[in-house]
Structures are given as C-alpha cells and as structure tokens.
Length: 360
Image (cartoon, rainbow, N blue to C red; front, side):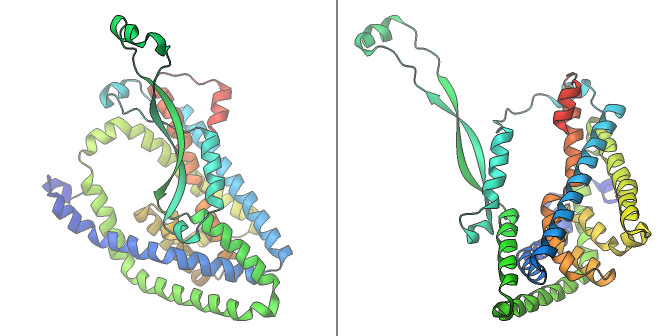
C-alpha cells in the first residue's frame, strides 16, 4: 500500500517485485504431481478395503455438508446485504458476449476428466466442451438459382451453435487422483507381492516432504512478494472498491462466518477439542493459501502442517487432502452463489425461490 503512493509504478518494477512470489508458486506446483501420487498410493495401500471405504464415505459426507453450508450461507448473505446495485452496470459498460456451455456439458466434462485417456497428457491438460458459432448456408431451390440471386436480396447469414471437445492447459488433478486411488487400492490388496512398490512410494513421499520443508524456509519472502505485487498491480483501487466493494464485503463476511464459526463448531461437535488450537497448527497453510489463492498449490504445506505440527495419521492425510483439495471448495461454492445473485441484482432481475434454490 505504501508503494502505491509512488504510483504509477513501471510494469517492469512490479514484475521484479512479484518475481520471487512467482518462483514460490512454481516450486509448489512442481511438487503437486509427485505428492499426489506418493501420498494417495501409500495412504490407500496401508488401509484395508473396509477402512478405506469408511474413510472415503466419511470424507465425502463432510465435503458435501460443508460445501452446501457455504453455498446456503452465501445466498442468505447476498439476499440480506443486497450488494448488486443496478447503477453499477452503467459504470461497467457492456461486456463481451460469451458462448457458455450447459450444466449437463460441464457435468460430462467432469466425468471425462475423471477418466483421462492419457495419463501423461493429464499431467498438463484437461478436456472441456466448447461452443462455437458456425455459419450455416440457407437451403433454396437451385433450379431458379440465377433468378433468385438477381431478383432477391441475399439472405442474412445463419449461425448455429456447434459443440466440440478441446484440451485446455492445466493439470487434470481429478483424473490423476481417480487413477492413483484405484492404483493404491489394488496395490494394497496384493499384500506382500507389492511390498517393493509400497516401499518405493513411501520413500518418494518422504523425499517430497523434505523438499517441502526446504521450500518453507523461502515461503515467507515469496508470499510477501506475491501479495505485494498483486496489490500494486491493481490500477485503481477506488474504482474497484466503488464497483465491487459491497460484493467483496459480502464474500469476505461469508468466508469469515464459515471459517471462524461453522467449521470450528463442526470440529468441536465431532472431536470435542478446542478447534482454534488446531487451526493454529495449520496457520502456515492459511497464509500460503492467502498468497497463492490455490488449493492445489497449498497442498504441500498443508501436508506438512497436519503431519508434523498436529501429528495427524499419515494414512488419513494422504487420502483426504489430495481429494479435498480438488473437490471440497467451500470458498468457491460461497463465492459463486454470491456472484450469481449479485449479477442478477445488478441487472434488476428478481429471482423467485425456485431460482434461488437452483443457484444453491
């Protein structure tokens, strides 16, 4: 914030300030793949089928419950605070028109990514449905085509939406998790035959965690530079605050209520221990998540905090954390619920109860 006083700051200077943070992000993302592979395989190989099924079902119930709570909380707050002022649309101007895919297409993309056709490709690409407008030539009787062209005005072009599949850059974490969950369960069922492979992945996991410890010594400096660079790069804080201020306040209030009230209450109700002492053990993961804004990027730090600071069983963390970092997006659920109704409010659209439930 102090550096903004010296604005405008040259883009090259901003890039230099944020560069150490960019290096931190790259190092954390570098460890995601080996960490997911080693943690899932060793965690599931150490559990029998009954234990892994019970652990998986409990984790999924928790993920779904907290996600629904976050979405409902977001809807309640956005209806109470009503951050969407129709006058904001006049200040923002007309936006670009996008060809959006349907919810069914998005669901099918999720299933497709769960079963990648190429594991190597899944390490850096994922599939998605895209909609493109394609011009369709109108049909007419070609027996009088000369008269038609000379006497009639050429009809306007007709466009039709055409769906196709294409790969976009980004690791297909869901597909990798699905494969290595199956790999770990099968390896666990083989018993002593797979002992050599289990030892290999255990050693791999220990090596990766040692790398994480090395990166953690650098992380305070990297996170500071990352946050500093983001604050400086905002062109006009006043304009952003005026246009999206109440929207951001609504989301932040929702995140605070969810993270400081609901989640601690669930923790206390289940384990009967002080939730805030637990949260202090993962404080470093919180700060890393704040700076990187990436669940997957924070995953290596979360592993270290839970296993070393809090002493959580590695068989639990190695299964729950990689899946949770991909599926359990409470903040995203809250943010998107608020965003959908905020946009409706900004456009003067009154949603009925059925439409609000659909947003949830």
